[in-house]
Length: 281
Ligand code: DGL
Image (cartoon, rainbow, N blue to C red; front, side):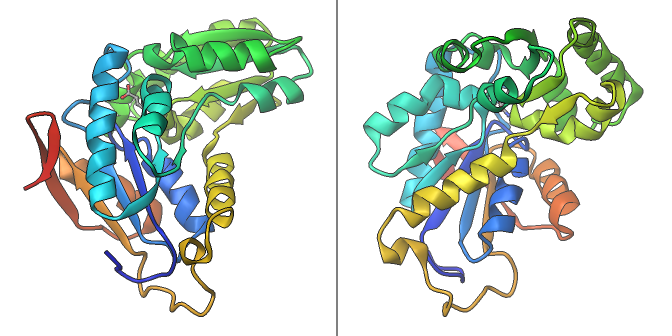
């Protein structure tokens, strides 16, 4: 479907609103592209679920996005990338851009030799994270902390409550005591906690949110494809961002999250799971 803009349609998905932080980085960089975003908040959080279940949801959402014209899919969720990226690439013909904790830049930038990773259980226990750490964290000690309960708080619009700050302090203090100078956000929901995290970590500790790096990667993948994927500068820029949003629960929260980023409330379509497939309502 062409809503405006030029080039291929880009699909995004996450267990909820977390991936909106990634979506926003991509549309800032590539404003002419049509984007589709699925928030599977009926199943949120993904983090504590078995990987097979997350794979199953990811497959259903990828199919839904491809059926609506997506030619590239951003798995805007570290947990789904950990569980499903490899199988999605095997099963579907479109390119996927996934997320993994930014261990490489953190290891390159650290001066203390200690880096902290805040991630969900699914990401921290996945092969993707283990492989990346083995490959890139050479010479650096990785301090990993599961951010239990944080995704739920972001979804509930409680990012700025004192209880959330307290929880974050409990998670971050041991890293700070271990002398980390890099804190990697290993879950896209945590981007919404950035101002609170910055208040907690000492000055001089870098907090790495991979959203902009992912946007650059999306651009690289598009540019490596045929011309019709890329679109042309002559294509009219859409009047407003050509974006469509879908939620399997609570469209109000998704709408409010997007509005907080871009200044206007998008329309959100409700979708529902039936027999393992995602359907429009
Ligand atoms: N935002 C997701 C991630 O990056 C999902 C977190 C969750 O649902 O537990 O991991």
